[in-house]
Length: 129
Image (spheres, rainbow, N blue to C red):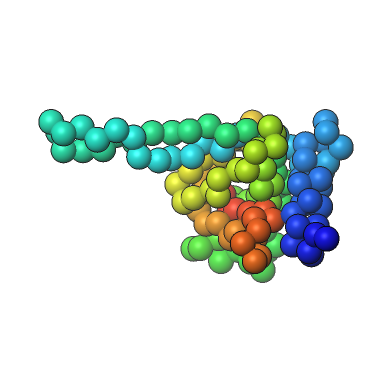
């Protein structure tokens, strides 16, 4: 029998799915930054970027939450599904990753993963245009 976290994950996946698939979210693209190949001649590691297709729901911050420093007027909250559109797990967004959502490119400022008992249920992302 599934426990509450498995059921919560299944509910989040259904609710955050794109509208075209019966959910409440929209499609988004996560541009995940990573480290690439090491160049021994220059002694540096080249950055790499991997693209993941997922879905999310966008919300505005309440006026009381905007302090002008940590949360700015233009910041948005993206509630991101834990799975890609293909059904595979979506890696957790990290600071400085970029998200293309509804025609706007956002930079990830902060991430609050919804991870309970080792089960990724979703991600609450603070994003800045």
